[in-house]
Amino acid sequence: MIPITIDGQPVEGKEGENILQVALDAGFDIPHLCYNENVKPYGACRLCLVEVVRRGRSRMTTACTYPVMEGIEVLTQSEKVLRARRMIMELILAMCPGDKLIQDMAKQMGVEQVRFKKDDNKDCILCGLCARVCDEVVGAHAISFAFRGDRREMVPPFLGEAMNCIACGACVVVCPVDVIRMKEEGDERTIIRWKRTLKMKQCKVCGNYFAPWFQLEKFKERAKLPKDFFDVCFTCRG
Image (tube, rainbow, N blue to C red; front, top):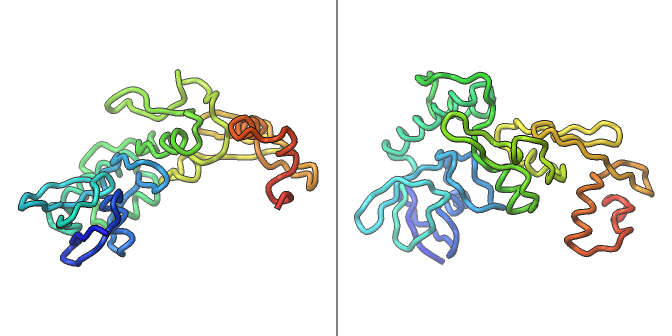
């Protein structure tokens, strides 16, 4: 175990962990939007900023990307940190003014007015979490960032239909601001934001539609499963 200090309290972390992991496990409240333990840290939202003192030198850094090191002192509530977080929260609120989670977080951090131009036409905070889950966990590589600056957005390749999307819904689950929606009608499932609609397979036992054909074929191909493995849904198989 690696000993560190967070806000004056001694804490221990494991090798390979980052400050945010250790702090959250120890009960410290550090705001974050783009962090998910199932994917590599990215530091996109910048909300998890902390002040790290190492060998007498202080620097601000994102807690999710800074590895645990012996002897470091972490400050999560210094005035410098809180001021920087409020600025970042103000920028995020201007980018995504209609989301309740963002509104609640801003209120909690004392951000009541936004000095930046609000964009009511945007709803994505560009955290990249959906793409990282799609790449690193699902392995579909169906979406990615495109363009730069204020035109930056998350889209399928070549701005068309997300042809590699298997409609698994992982991006729907991890999106922190709930802008990726999924609907099922009859024998079809649609990931609305990526304009991807796939036919669903029907369970031979209960008759319910349980997963897209395209998704199941990909799973069978990767895992080298028998052809009839997905003839029955997960519930009936159990």
